[in-house]
Amino acid sequence: MKLKFLLPAVLCLGALLSACSSKENGTHSSYFGICSFEYTDLETVWTDSLYMTDGFVGADGVSFSGYNPASTMNPTETGFVLSARHDSRLEAGYQARDLAVLDKGAFHGTTYVIYVDQNGAASRHTVSFDYNSLGTCMLNGLYVHNTNRVATLAAYGLGDAPAFAKGDWLKLTITGYLGTTKTSTVEVMLADYTGAELNLLKEWTAVKTEEFGKFQYLDFSVTSNRTDVPLQACIDYLVTNIEIDY
Image (cartoon, rainbow, N blue to C red; front, side, top):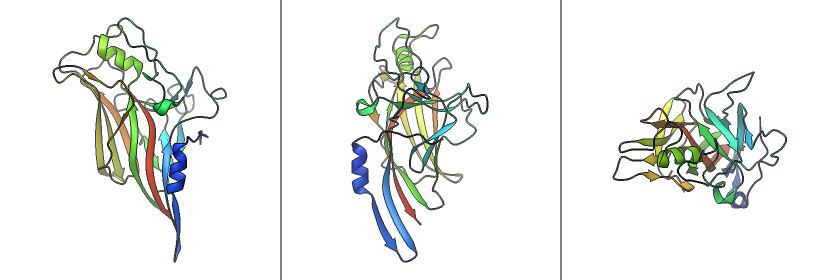
C-alpha cells in the first residue's frame, strides 16, 4: 500500500536538486528521495497513534516492510511501524509507553517509524529499491533515536529487567545489498555500557553514510547482549539519491 506523506520544506531542496537530461536512447533522471514519514491523516487508518501495515512506500521507489503482528492475512513479526507517539519523560520508576520515541519526530515532525526486530525473524528485506532494473540508489543519510522504553530500561531498569550494567549494549546495524552481494554496513550504538559509563542515545542522531554504497535492499537489525531488552529503534528522514535511465 502506498501512503501519502506530507512533504516537508526540506523536500523542496530535493526538488531543486533533481535533474533530468535527454540521452540518445532515453532520459536520465537524478533525484533525492526523502522519507519523512509525515502522514496526512492520523484518524482513518491509525489506532492509538500507531499505523501497522504489511508494508508501505516511504518515498518514490523506496519500499519498507511493515511490522503487523495482528494481521489476519499476513502477520509480520519484524519490520517498521509508523508511530505518532512521543514520550520525553525519562526517570526511575516511570512505566514508559511502548512504541514511543523519547522526543518528537526529527526536526519536530509528528510521525516517524520504529523498526521492531523479533530476534532476526524477518523473512524479507526490510527496505527495497523498487526501480533497481532501471537505475541505482544510494543511502545519503538518516536519523536514529531510542524509544522511551529502551532508554528507560537502559538507564534505570524497567519491570523485572535491571538497568544496563558494565558490558551491556544495544546496537542497530544497517546492511546494504546488491542482489545477494553485501555492499555496505553501518552500525549505531543505541545504548553502550562497554566503557566506563553508560552512553545512551537521547536525541535524534544523524547516521554517517558517506561510505555507504549503492543498494537494492537494506536490512535493518537490532541486537543486544541481553535478552530482556526491546529490540527496536526509531528512524526518521531517510534520504536516498536515485538515478534512473528510461
